[in-house]
Each structure stands twice: as structure tokens, then as C-alpha cells.
Length: 476
Ligand SMILES: Cc1cc2nc3c(=O)[nH]c(=O)nc-3n(C[C@H](O)[C@H](O)[C@H](O)COP(=O)(O)OP(=O)(O)OC[C@H]3O[C@@H](n4cnc5c(N)ncnc54)[C@H](O)[C@@H]3O)c2cc1C
Image: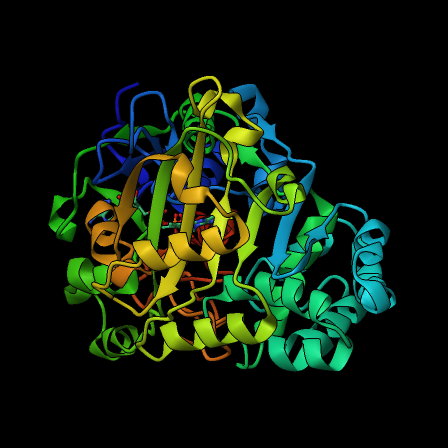
């Protein structure tokens, strides 16, 4: 379909948030055009043969509880546009030295049975939220506003405001529950003794009881392809291989939504924004980056506890103290000798990812912003610790340092994968404190990336709320 000569909206960047914004605007009757720097749409949701022919690796995002539970994405008929989820029997396995792995299962009760004396405390913590189901996330995944379930949100806030370390010490007596909660909290990419990291631990633990952390069949690119197909069906148009450097390069439109980092917004549109706002944007805190490895494997990862092979995600890092030390290192500009490693094993549940009998492996750890240290040996040693013989099944590997990630996607400034630090100073007030964080002082320009609430992850909610804000402007 040809682009109309006069557009309502241009979206710069086609990550999940750019596509979600385009989907809402196009389905609301607006003419929408998406401009993308890369040859392929999708931002953090692309899939490629990074190692050997026939091995399909998720270049960035891999596991999608927030995608399946997303208050916006779950309203779209994405299955009709080709998206299918592969569900593992277990969401998370957390191996520990010398004892069985801790397993986060869909059932709270079954999970609690593996937590010994802390099982009751786990149930008391999770049950009230799990009973509310996925709609409870509607209040969590968005900007600061009056919640639709104020009492439940107050309960969530009561626990979540604490640090993950403080919360686990207060709630649990033993290592197993503390460690598995800490693994979920480490998705915050922040020191676990920081305020509000308890909220991230609670959110990610909760999602294991609301869905089985799924992967997209065929690779994460299936998510962006389904969104692209939905947008095209509503008249939206696309342009790839076009990296925008200035506003002058954009086609005429009534509004522009940037699915980009604040630093990029300054470079492209700084001249069209008041200097005070630009100054505040330039103070944005990006937080730590990541170092990632993909492997082509001759067989599955030989976990010492075979239950680990049944989980889409394995949190490799041991005790809460070890995980907290590793996350503190990355935040302080240091490199942990024993990093906390997030491992996913897509080919176990989606055979299309690897040739018959072979497997893919995917892992990353958090490192300082812009780090240039090669973490390959340390990541593989951590996996070997819980899966002796792991190195023997490696056929090939591809690594991505923070600089590689930023080259691949200029929005991943310094190798930062979740749009910027999600600490208390920036969780709701990203990119700057503003009543409508998606708008800018320029009435034509909006930000719709993970640098706006609710932040990182493939849920499209930043794009959804930015598009709602832009729609208001278009209809005014
Ligand atoms: C290694 C890694 C692992 C991850 N794992 C998960 C996971 O398992 N689950 C999960 O939910 N999330 C995960 N994430 C996070 C998730 O991918 C991001 O939070 C999400 O992609 C952010 O979406 P976005 O739309 O805001 O931006 P992005 O996905 O970053 O998209 C921005 C787009 O803008 C384009 N662009 C940049 N500059 C320009 C320009 N000047 N002109 C035109 N286009 C431009 C880029 O090419 C890109 O396509 C992971 C990310 C990484 C890197």
C-alpha cells in the first residue's frame, strides 16, 4: 500500500512499542507511517541465524510473559496474524549448589511445596494477586494514575516498595524462596538492596503463576511480524533501512512518535524542544548494560537437575547474596567473577529453532554501562557450575557486547536493554517528571519507547499510552 501524501502520524523506530503505537493509531482510523533504521522491523523482537545455518536465535528478547499478559497486546487478534506461543511446562528453574533446583510453576501451591518451610509465606504473598488474574497487571503496566483496584495496588506497593533483599529476609526463612525471588527481582537490572526492587521480584514471580513464560513459535520476530500484518491490515505503511538523523528527513505529519532513547530524541529533535526539557532529558540515567551469548548446541544443556530442562528460563546465580553481589557490581561499574546469568532454552519447546536433535542456547548477564569486557568465560563457567559438561555440547557461539548491541540497535545506548534504569527516581517519571510523560513540550512530538512508563520489556504498553496521548492531540 502506498503512503498517503498527508499523514496523521509518523513513528520513528519499529520496536514493540513503536509497533503497538502504530497499531492503536491505525486501528483508530489514523494514517500512520513507520520509519525504521534496520533492514527488518521489530527492534528488540528479531530472530536470526547468529551461529550456524538452521539455528534460529532471538537476537534480543526471548521469553514473553509480559507479551502474553500485556493489557494491550492481549486485546489484538495477533494469532490471526500468525503469532503462536510455545508454552513450557515450567516458567523458571533456579539451580542451587548441592540441592534440587527451585521451580516456579503455574500453580502457587505446587510451587510452595518445593519451598519447604517458606511455602506458606510464598502462598500468602502470591495468592491475593493471583486470584485477580491478568487484569491486575492493567494497573501495574502503565503510567502513574488512580488504580482501578486501589486496595490490591496498596498491598502490592506495601511489599514492592522494599528492596528485594529486605523483602526476602523479612518474608522467608530459608535460602530456596529467597534465591528464586531474587532471580526474578534481578530483571530490574539494579542492585537488589535498592528500594522498589521488591516490586520487580513480585511482578516477575507473579507472572509465573499467571502464565507459563512463553516464547514465540519461530522466534521473537513472529511478534513483530504479527503486529506488522495487523497494522498493514489497517492501512499503515512502513519504510526500512532509513535511519533518521533530523526532523527534516521525516515526511509531513501532524504528530511524530519516537520509539527511541532520550539521547536520540535530543540529537534528532533537540532544536525543536525547549532547552530546559533537553537538559532534563540529558540527565536521564541509563543504568547497566548486558553481555549476551547465543550458542548452537549439539544437545540440550546437561543440567545436573534435569528439571531445569523443563523451564523456558533458568536463573543461574545461586543464592540471594551472590545474585545481589553480582547486580551491585554491574551498577558500580565492576564485573562480577560469578555473574547472575539469565539462560533461555527456546529449542526445547519450539523445534523450529534448531536442526533435529540439536539445540539453541541463549544467555546474558548484566555488566556496567558501555562495558568492553568479554564475559564469555565467566558466563560459561556459571552454567558449567550447574550443568557439568556444558562446554562439550557447544558447536558455535555468537557474542554481543554492549557496543555490539548499540551498533545493532542505536536505541540500546551503552548496551542498555530496558530503556534505562528503573529505579525509584525514574520508574514512573521516565524520561522526565511530567504529567503526561509521553508528550513533550513540542505539541507535535511524542516519545513512545521503553524510556517511558512502564519501561522495558515486550508488552507494547509504552507505545499504547503514547498513542493514546497522541490521539487526544489529533482529535483536539
Ligand atoms: C539481549 C536482550 C534480551 C532481552 N530479553 C527480553 C525478554 O526476554 N523479554 C522481554 O520482554 N524483553 C526483553 N528485552 C527487552 C526488550 O527487547 C526491550 O525492552 C524492547 O524491545 C523495547 O522496545 P521499544 O519498542 O521501546 O524499543 P526497541 O525494541 O529498542 O526498538 C527501537 C527501534 O528503533 C530503531 N531505531 C533506532 N534509531 C533509529 C533512528 N535514528 N531512525 C530510525 N529507526 C531507529 C531501532 O533499529 C529499533 O528497531 C531484551 C532486550 C535485549 C537487548
